[in-house]
Length: 472
Image (cartoon, rainbow, N blue to C red; front, side, top):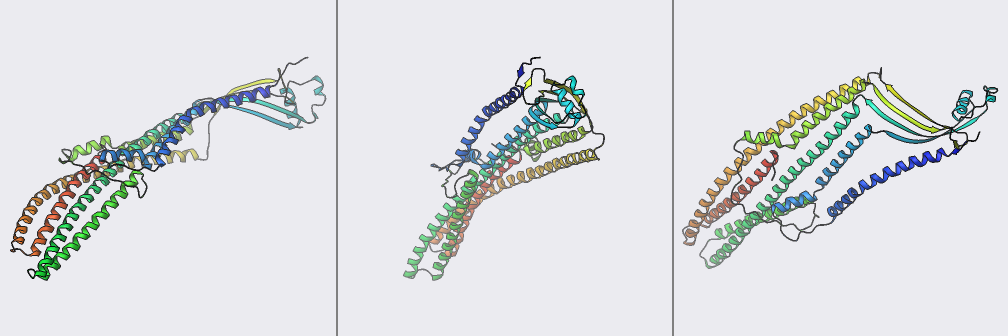
């Protein structure tokens, strides 16, 4: 009988390789734009940036959000979580594999099976059925498997992966809020340091001028040596103040460079905000707490973690349930690798599997999952308590800063008037240098306190926006 030979091995391998190539090509097309986009982002992020003009607060925040490495890290975590969702969906699709097997045996039972599978059984094979000799078997095949039911584990793993994406997005929101607050705080710290430097420089110039006049008067014999020494002490104090203010500027700039991902010695200048009105806090602590409960991403993250742990308990419990899967195998058997048309075959079936005893392993895994759930519930409670404390403390800090600013502005008015009167008395010779220096110091300190209190209100308000989850 003539058999029309089919090269099933070649056909099967070509089919498997074609399927793999198509899938790889599709995956490559989907990934290429993302990889290109990431490369561009990485290049722009790694390139040294030189700031040609001073930045206002809004520009500084936007630059930090675009360049800060932590923001890029959270974006990659979101991408990882999204890929895990796709991976979890793979369990719902058929799994297709190509395989080529080679066997050699002289076991009569196996040889008999090879002969039958190769459609090569002849009547004379009965004569030597107990001693058939050795035989080879080539089998190329394509195998498909499909999970019909896995105790619900595949579904719950998919839900866990989806919750992972939501948690990653909430982490990015939390980092966004923290970064905005840190940039704002550093920006205002730099503004305070620059204002203090200006006050210290003006005080130093004024003392130097007065010291020169005092030295001239001392040479003329119209003033005491103690007055000159007092002014020299005052000059040293103002120089120390100026040094501290200058160092404060550099420290604040270092913090901004880190947040903006700038080089260590990259120049960075800011524009001092000209805000006349003080920020208005919420009407009450209760309102601030309610806003935080609704908006804080950390609370939502804790809730999502509880939901994740709940799904993981169901995954562990799913091991008690049976697993059902279907499979199909199409291939052929031959002794020399050339498959004839009557040598191909198909095997299909459904398998049900269930663990009857796992050495109490399943029970312990369920207990672990349940304990992790309880831990997450307590952690969520802890997060809520911590946020309530943060909101309360920050609200009180803002109220304190506003009150201190109001008091400081009153003291500035009094200090300015006192210095004006003492200056007139000093020029008329009715006030000592010590009294003059005291009045000048009081004026400088009042101005510094006012500036510090003013910017403290903006810093406290930015912190309140963060803890309530409402950054601008």
